[in-house]
Image 1 (cartoon, rainbow, N blue to C red):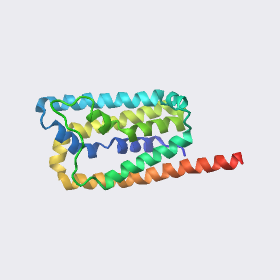
Image 2 (image 1 turned 90 degrees about the horizontal axis):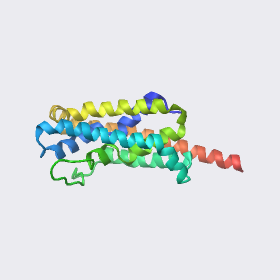
Image 3 (image 1 turned 180 degrees about the vertical axis):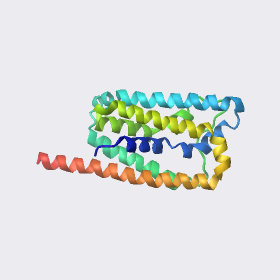
Length: 202
């Protein structure tokens, strides 16, 4: 299944999850000087973009080195995205991040794994493995997704205060539902390719 540019942008926005990251960023940056918060967010976004760009450019070589096929990536990517989507739809009751940061966060956990997490890395690998000839399109899609994250997270505190916890949670669950459907479609596509390959080899 060929992914369109718009669907790639949407998928990358969903897996980097800027709205879902709002309470996490606000909570972890609360102890930091307000004047430093926005520069930290920009720095962490640049780190995350660099990491995802690395996997986008060199992920194919890593897959070849590990002898992983596009079909395997399609199925694995679908499973990972489905698990991430379930967490978005059914968040942990205590809402904890699992990370304790003293002082100014650096790379972990804001850039990794909150933005450039396993689902985002799997997504960029999958996009490139399915259609490596459209690398410039995937890079542009990543740039737009990161710009969306920058716009949302740059005003995380204001958005959090304006929307409130309940509305933010509702948006998070809605995005989780959309991501669930995309994950199932990705998984079915991988299984279909696998079955067709078995029939062709029979």
